Amino acid sequence: MVCADIDIDAAKRVADGIARDLRITAHGVQVDVANADDMEDFSRNIISEYGVPDIVVNNAGIAVAGAFLDHTLDDWRRTIDVNLWGVVHGCRLFGAAMAERGQGGHIVNVASLAAFAPSQVLPAYSTSKAAVKMLSDCLRAELAGHGIGVSAICPGFVSTGIASHATYTKDSLREDAVRGLARRGYPPERVAAHILRAVHRNQALVPVNAEGKIGYALSRISPRAMRGLARLSKFAGKDRPYGRR
Image 1 (cartoon, helix red, strand yellow):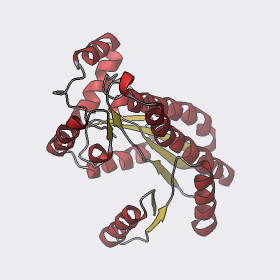
Image 2 (cartoon, rainbow, N blue to C red):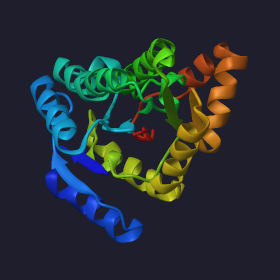
Image 3 (cartoon, one colour):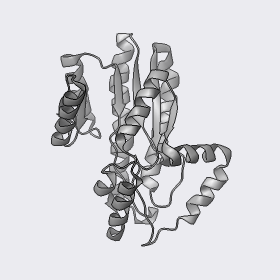
């Protein structure tokens, strides 16, 4: 297993934990998924040293919390670069290698409840995750003939560090966001279990946890209700825009 992160120390910590707990070989490497040249080098090195991967999980994500009119162009560019282009690079490079190998494989793209739940406080994040979901649907249709599965994983609130690393247009919102995700008490390990099941069953779309499943069902049954809920969450100092993965 190869764990890649822009933070090399974080990648190595995860790899070391996997090697220790699962007793398999794991490596941590550094890569900026938003950088096309970095990803070209990364994929080439991985394939050269370890071979074409059987499973690729595109999971890197960042969040900017705040009203659309408070987002800067840099907020939008960085969010799209990481959340969407990072997935595009991973799918393009490793998907092509899987198809050429001709032995199947699976690509997992981690989207979010935000992919189908509009939000006044996460416009860039939600837009990027909706794009990841659609990309996954398109790629699933194309790669099926190569025996390659594609799954979009759409968690609701998960207790990760995304809120503490997010950018906030109002600094007063950070504390509530970080505390809210911690209180949710839904660990990333449970999302990982859903990912493993999705690969095993070749599932196209997997909403995760209660709010993810309810949000997905409501988006199918009554999109109007989802838009109404979005209008109710007015962006103010008392609001709690939690980062989603």
